[in-house]
Image 1 (cartoon, helix red, strand yellow):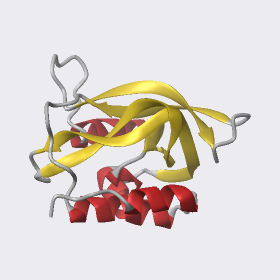
Image 2 (cartoon, one colour):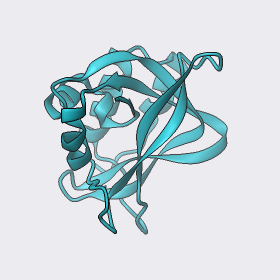
Image 3 (cartoon, one colour):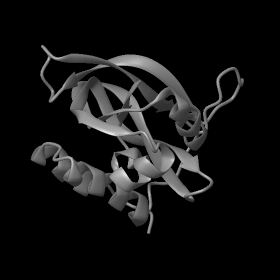
Length: 154
């Protein structure tokens, strides 16, 4: 299964801890979406990443291939359980473009947050995870600069 990570799961060590089978496929862009922090994580105590529609932007991230036995682990870490009425995130199948190239589509699963009223911004530790992953996988410099501008709660 291919999955698209755009938040803290871009950070390789975290992803490998959650999914031992994870293999890096490449970087990709989800068209007409941007990074936002629409949900508060009880575990992290801060706002956490979401992909929200935005006609003028592309959301960059990392595509991993994970074995079917790790899907449940990733679902659990994202607060998603199929069939449950209320989840923190929902998993949807979407199309992203490898290296942002519209001629190289990939069908992936993406986790989208179930937004909450007024979540706080991310904290500096969470922001560092996102930036660490973005730098490690060499996302576009312009996008990394955008991530560096994220305001934090602490």
